[in-house]
Amino acid sequence: MNDKVKYEDKNLLIKTNSVSKKHSNSTAVDSVDMSVYKGDIYGLVGKNGAGKTTLFKILLGLTNATSGNVSLFGNSSEKNNTISRKKIGSFIGPVFFPYLTAKENLKYYSKIKGVSNSKEIPKLLELVGLKDVKKPFSAFSLGMKQRLGLANALIGNPELIILDEPVNGLDPEGIVEIRKIIKKLHEENGITFIISSHILNELEMVATTFGFLNEGKLVKEINQNEFKHEDITSIVLEVDDVTKTINILESLGVENITLKNEEEIIINSPTVKSNDLAKKLVENNINLFKLNPKIHTLEDYFFDIIGG
Ligand SMILES: Nc1ncnc2c1ncn2[C@@H]1O[C@H](COP(=O)(O)OP(=O)(O)OP(=O)(O)O)[C@@H](O)[C@H]1O
Image (tube, rainbow, N blue to C red):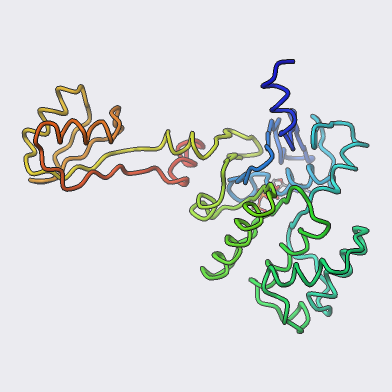
């Protein structure tokens, strides 16, 4: 075993090997090979019915895979996975007692998880902004319910947290609150996250790695750096001399040049780096008023990949 493999193994918190879940008439999860590393915020992207929740349930041991196997924290036996799951917190939909308060609900789940640290619950309630809320869960707004779900996932100080659609149905303010809490936990406590969402611009803001699930298949896994690298779709230039600029671009072998108006040029699918381009234009005494690389959004990328 070389050093790289050892390093990767140590940091590989979740690895699924050709995991599938078949129902009588359909396949919810289809031969998924997924890798989640320590420190990731892994964004699982997929349309409704893509298989996200089923995959999470398999990871959490809430349902069995029909075939394939799951390795958690470097172990793959079911016995070891049961132990490893104690290091995983999760939130898959609200599962709280409607007549209990936030504190009472968390106390109940602490007991179920065998956590006896009495100082933990007030801290968690403070973190998610529910410390002073005395009303029962049934009177909570959707945002409060989601935040309580996050607090519940944090009971027992997990190393990894799985969140299924944590911002679904929230207003923009609620979305920002959840994002801030996730980022704080990731940065300050080093917690690894797997988050599913179909709100792609939100996921794009937090995730460090993306997995694209389509009709049960994990069609691509890509980290944020690779994604950023792959995703410049065009460069918009605003210059004082478009004719001279086009000549320079052509001399550099740049293709797909479109003249938008008397000052603006668009380069589609550029093969040239924007800083090299800027340098070259300035060297040739072009006054560069704007150089704007247009970036693929996660949504564009997703639809490119799934062909939708
Ligand atoms: N118990 C079940 N019996 C039969 N089919 C099921 C069952 N559970 C899920 N499915 C099907 O498996 C597919 C994947 O469902 P799943 O809930 O995992 O998707 P999802 O990506 O989480 O979607 P959503 O975002 O809508 O929750 C869907 O077609 C669903 O109808």
